Image 1 (cartoon, rainbow, N blue to C red):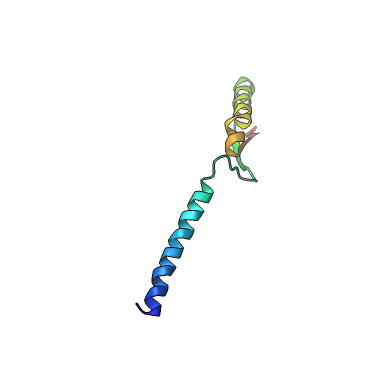
Image 2 (cartoon, rainbow, N blue to C red):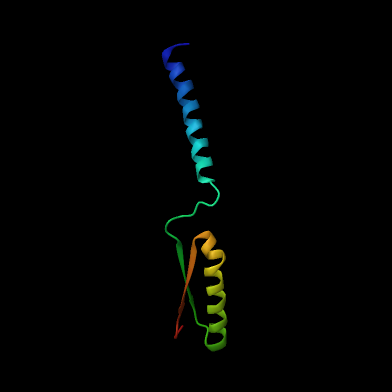
Length: 80
């Protein structure tokens, strides 16, 4: 086997090892992003509907959102 063919063979193997190592590194359980994803929700709800929406968003932010690194920010629009 000549030098060029050997270099291609081992270069390909090295590339696959790196790809697999990066894949398993990203699958580490319990690893969270440092910066959460912030989603802004614009709505036109008033009074009771707004209170219900705010309660649901607050519950999401303190449970699933905290676990997944997602924060929902609610913005009410007066005139739509």
